[in-house]
Image (cartoon, rainbow, N blue to C red):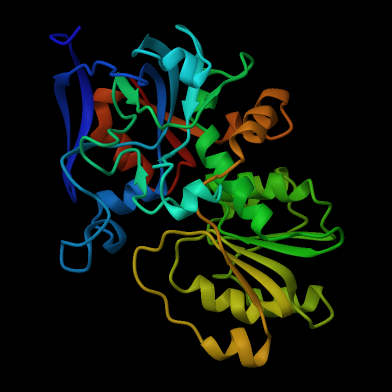
Length: 358
């Protein structure tokens, strides 16, 4: 097997992603070789591709990305080979349809030992660290020994399975909002993850579920997926509209999923005193806010949201039973070897989720 090759999308730097023929990996002890069924292009992939400072630093160094590396952290596939002890370690068998969580915890740092594995200090995430966690934009990939692996319900297709990761992230963000029945909840940014957030938030029986976005086609989808009110801030004053819907108080929960540096300030102005703001987006640049609103003026709860900890099983269940629709959000598919066209489609803004099919 070591002499067999495969195609993979290899990140060499901003705007330098290449479809290459590379050696097919061989699983070591505890590792799993997976034949990838589908891989998604995430907003984080786009920001990495375009040189976002989170990934490359403000001067091209010091960011999270470590090239060259096979890209991709939204993926799923079938078990093609098992390294020594891997079947027993992960409770899986050849042919199983499986997904690994996007982070590979070290199991040794203070966070891992406290059960907070998603904040693991080494913080190795698939698709960004060379040799340590090669990603899923490839025909085959390795789930390392410390991977958190889940068996996928057979009712879920290969394409839907690539949505398990973004749905888990959406569910975690909604959980961080601590929504109570009757709350007015704003989801700002209803792209593919925001639309998942809407569906997840609906389960908490909010009094009003409000979607905010600058693209009207997304707002139309938001109404279909449960939004009671939709607002385009380019067409009306979003803060005034929300306050008008809440007797002047503002929303109880604001979930930021736009990726726009102006959105956090809008959220601070829109939310009521003692409300909760969930910061989810990976921003392309730095955001400026009036910090006095957080403490002195409103005593807000600011909750970060990172990855999808403990949410993979419920994401799998929700897709399998149809209670959350991800199939309708897959709007473009490309062969893996057409990565350039796929990235162009993902960056164009007219697609919700673009998939690569090896």
